Amino acid sequence: MAIHGTMTTDNHAALWHGRFQEGPDAQAVDFETSIHVDERMALDDIKGSIAHAKMLCQVKLISNEEAEQIIKGLQSIKDDLENGSLSIDYSAEDIHSFVEATLTDRIGEAGKKVHTGRSRNDQIALDERLYLRRFIPDLQNTILTLIDALTQIAENNTKTIMPGFTHMQHAQPVTLAHHLCAWAWMLVRDFNRLKDSLSRINISPIGSCALAGSGLPLDRTFEAKLMDFAGVTDNSLDSVSDRDYCIETASNLSMLQMHLSRFCEEIVLWSTTEFDFISLSEKWSTGSSIMPQKKNPDFAELIRGRTGKVYGDLIALLTMMKALPLAYDRDMQEDKESLFDACDTVIANIKVFTQMIATASWNKDKMRAACNGGYLNATDIADYLVRKGLPFRTAHGVSAKAVRYAIEKNCELEDLPLELLKECSPLIEEDIYSKISVEACVETRNTIGGPASESVLKQIKDLKDFVKKGISE
Image 1 (cartoon, rainbow, N blue to C red):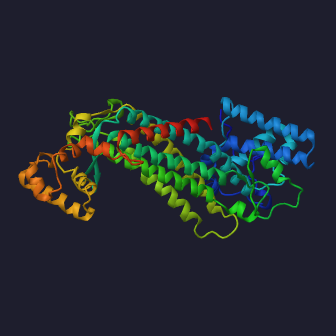
Image 2 (spheres, rainbow, N blue to C red):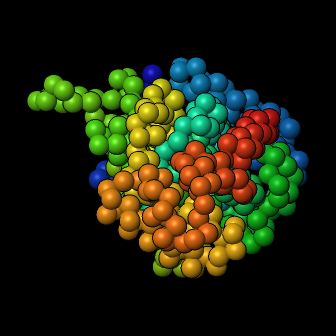
């Protein structure tokens, strides 16, 4: 049950109210509070406060008995929040105020000592870092699940031939497995960017206080170790005015969301009658209120549409910070809404996309038939001639001439009679036909990263190994 009130007691007054004789206007309070946004960091705030109490005891700023009271009180708040017997008090200004006020209500005067040697400026920077340290591994796990789903589909489709495109025009034949691996490797980069960002997030700012550190004998390194941070920030001014870790996370999320959006664009195209490469499960499709025949890829479209939200969150953070002087400015309170929105949007999108793609079916015959027309094997005629010693630029011209003949005859390159191909170049022999079948075009491309089945199977193995390693870490 929620605790509601107007913060009329000392324990529930705004943490900064001491200098003021007159209380803030109700509208002003409503305007400047952030607890509806930062309540999700309650457990992070408690974790930080427990570590802070242990440090204060270590340096003898509070007694062992007081530390024990504080830690026990904070643990009881954590337990009650988790089991639902305590709800957030939305009359509190922020999550720090709520935790401290609730603690003081429970244990009395000792609760007022928990804020010794810190400010909400370094406290919020700590809470955000603790939150991201929890969120990013969860996000990485969803990425691994999607990579795993893609590799499973790829493994079953190493021989499923389809056209590859540039400029949305038929270019060269590939396989569905090759195409799916391309998506998966994008996600590998997203995973690694997030992993790399954790090294910069995992630095403790606590003890920087408002901006100038503290005259009290705080042990920042001891406190950081209690929370498994790799170290402490180097400058107290920078510590409380830095939001690079929020912006970097939002940037990484934007790139990840961009990849999802590109995937979804192809899913939308491929599910059209014109392509008909993929059929989405009815569980992940919607109909029309007026056209009973419709089966719409709405979930792919929604993921694609929500990309603007994530980009907007990044731009909001960049714009918020672009002209702020050192150190902390209240503008920075606005960071959390954008950061959390980007986090929530992207992780939800990945989960939906994974289910959508894992339950889809693939029209292999349609993909293979789509390789007819467009002369996807034109480059292979040039490659055939290059192997016989013809310079590539000359071979390119020969192949172009063959394409013109095929257009005039309204046929495929492999259907041109040998005498016409010889008119293009006397180097062309009967064996040309075995070299320019769509299957041969794919299997010939066995360079690292290419679409040949041997190359794709190696990619699939590497992706599976990446997933296993990521899960084990």
